[in-house]
Length: 108
Length: 108
DNA sequence: TGACATACCTAGATTTGCTAGGTATAATAT
DNA sequence: ATATTATACCTAGCAAATCTAGGTATGTCA
Image (cartoon, rainbow over all chains, first blue to last red; front, side, top):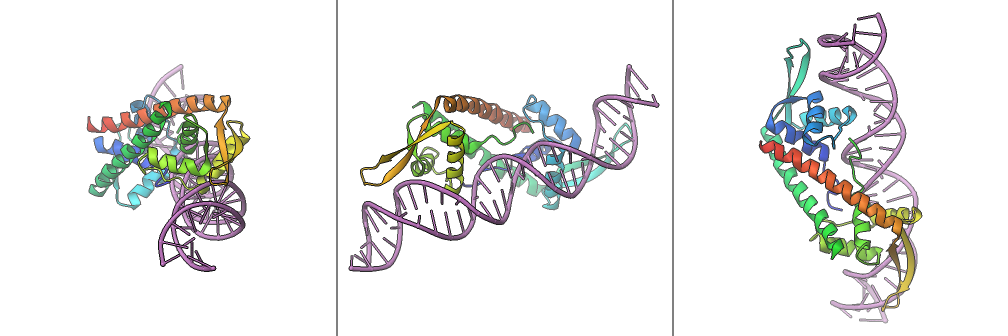
């Protein structure tokens, strides 16, 4: 079907970054928190997507030292990324609406 | 993440069959209709899933002649299939709710 | 000092859906 | 009459998305 699988991971990452800059590991924790542990994103999923987003100029990376002394790799949403987020948000709403329409029809 | 990709195709098919028995080609048309053309399921997607559902005893197939004279292969939801549908429905709601929670947090 | 949490990374397998082909019949247009 | 389109089923192989399972390294706490 048409764009059957929305790139959920990408949508979620962009959405997180729209509230504030974050580093990878933080995104995993934050996603779990905001979804009440429904999402348990794996590092093997996150990092490749993050690198692809950077390569496509949807996000920019920069390093910053944490209070602990460790250097973290933060990601910032670009203008292009913001546009992509809006687009994917729309796609998600359309998609979820369609699934719900089919599920509701079930009861009819 | 945990069951990241709900088996959307399966959920949609089971949902369709819960309203009435259908044959494959009909499901494609009906899905498009109920979703207002958001879903355009491909035959290459549908038939393999249908066969897997049959093998797993979630649906049963039977042949029936159409008024046109052609024989169609109808599918009927089994009790097991009904249980699976309820389960996947729940999973979908949980999943969609989590995505929406993350998207809403964005605005915060 | 040993275990665990933090923090990053990648190769390869798995799953899911799509592309692109095939067969065959019925309806419709030319 | 005949060519095209819609109906109706099928499968092999490709592509994309995510996960598994490993690796490296540092900081924290019992």
